[in-house]
Length: 331
Ligand code: AMP
Ligand code: MG
Image (cartoon, protein in one colour):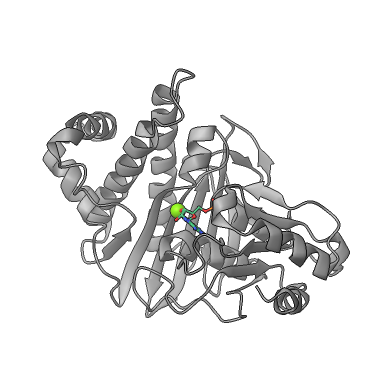
């Protein structure tokens, strides 16, 4: 239905690149060594600013399309949050000088829609803890039509060539179009995205590279060990924040990405904006994505993947063996 030259694809690439530039600016100006561990204000400002930018640009490019974003302006409109709103407005004004706090809130709230027949879904900053730590994070935008992800764009400012960590490098941009393929490029404007993404051909479980959340609370550490043992994986799992893991997998730099359920939140349901763009990247790069029971991800159930449990993404070759290992450990 779409291709790399479709106006939707070009829009998504442009807006994700701009949003990455904006949040990098906020990070550079607000994340200082003096920041206390509890102070989440840079990520709060960056989250809202990123969603406001995408909301505004979507309104201009596709006024009839709705946006399902992670944020809404309710908290931001409280008097106690006035300073945060002013900071968001300040950063947005550097791109759009005619901005004011009311407009900023309206742009953010464009992301408050419920899923429709055709809609976009946005994670304005995925991996907020990585953003604050100076590790990996991503901006993820996807277009869903009739319950299927058709287009996914992922901006990873601290990832180079889809695998290497680099702060202040050109970053990586992953683009996937259903039925057409997946590509990787940089976050620099105007640079064509033309290198194809392909998953690894590794079929030996012993040599598989596992990818897992950096945050232990987002997964189950003892089950990861049991899984690795059941599958015969030798190497330690790679810890990484955000959907950057999907891009690493799509680029053939890892074989298996697991989201096991935290013992503290065994009923956790994945959010659509956390999985839409990245899962299409892996599928279009030749990989497979399912939940822990082997079911396809169901994007028709609202803002969450209510009909799925956890996640298993792989280079396809290792999917059956990984599913078998999951059954063995009863994850
Ligand atoms: P990651 O960096 O892979 O851990 O993914 C970050 C995403 O994990 C965030 O965007 C959250 O939406 C999501 N998340 C929050 N709590 C949990 C949880 N208990 N289990 C799994 N994912 C979670
Ligand atoms: Mg997220």
